Length: 197
Image (cartoon, rainbow, N blue to C red; front, side, top):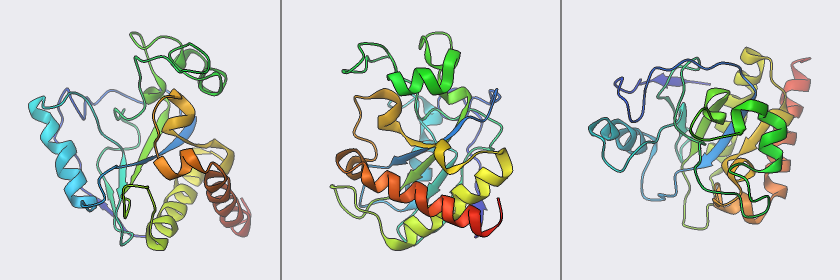
């Protein structure tokens, strides 16, 4: 697995240089932009240093060819899964799952958020439905195995933006077909098991 480290310029909008408090999960996203590769999505996050279109970033971006860019160090906060909107099912800012999984990190958006205990991974889709190439998925599995080993996480600690906030279809296809998330977790678990982890 090759990871290109291309760190965002420190700024208030996409790389605030706040420190991660704990490692509790890896959050999978989609970029929602099938016409852009990993570098172009990195440039989008980098451009946020001007304050354009508010906050947003992720630790890693994986393109359609499996290219992987690290935009933010693991030990720094990325703005990828915070919310001020209510989850439609629970009526709370975060889902029941998120509040159980992240505890005080998922109570009130004005004081903290799951951004302080998660690593965000953006996947570049091939279409507006949210399909990913085999190379993207394989690279994401390899990255998640690496992150699980590094931060003492398991495949069960892999989640999605949708599972945390409830209102966002991110990644879109996995929101509509949650069995795809289950399959992804199983692939990571199998790879960890082969390593004896």
